[in-house]
Image (tube, rainbow, N blue to C red):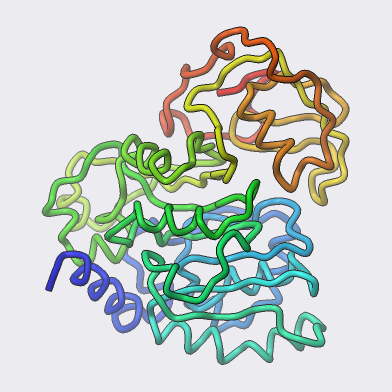
Length: 356
């Protein structure tokens, strides 16, 4: 048995046999703390209790402006995020969930009709597929057919994260987005931590060092990963904490745009954008990431990558653009001044024109 197969089997056993509900978790890694935004709270209230009881996510994977979108959830488990997103995309959209754990998918599929009736839809707009997120090309999914791909505390469990990101990018439409929460470490973990079945199942053993994650993302074609939010994780179980040693862990949400030609640095072309408003739930300001809170009606200087993320994605109709790429002014002011997770990203904490 090779290492990849062994890891998959351990994860399937942990989530299919060991864990019955989220109360069985031994750490805070695979759970989402804090208050939900109003829209998500209402959508979550419409999800079946059994589905909610088997939720193991670490963040909120519901990006803005999903009405009518086609969304793919990698590692959907029992389907909580799928059913929340199904309400956000509406009857004209569709959500596909992929998972390798038969026990979790059985719960998700059992409640398809229940949710259809709860939402008041004439037809279900969800679908569940059993398979590996490292082998998305084997699931019969059309290339370049998804507007958004989400994942909630699952990619860390994968033994081949490169394959996951590369497969995801191939399924995204041009200008599409991968928006996902996961667990990261502040250093490369020793093999003993990686091989521990409980630490792996608790979303710690498979956590990438954040620097290595950025490299993997670039190799997959996502040149500029944007950190949306992050929070430190606690390992309160003394036995597990001792195994982890001095490593620190963080739950973080990133967004990756499938836009060809994005640069690896924030370059300054003298550009700016103006948010016109109109995105539901973001009437006064739009937060692209932890360093870009763009107030409605205010001219907001941006780097070339941010300019393209806004003007070549589903957000384009909500912005006016100022400038082009005809003149380069060097690196965007402030770029590279902050490292991921040194201070958890706080939406709204940035100043106008701060690109990084």
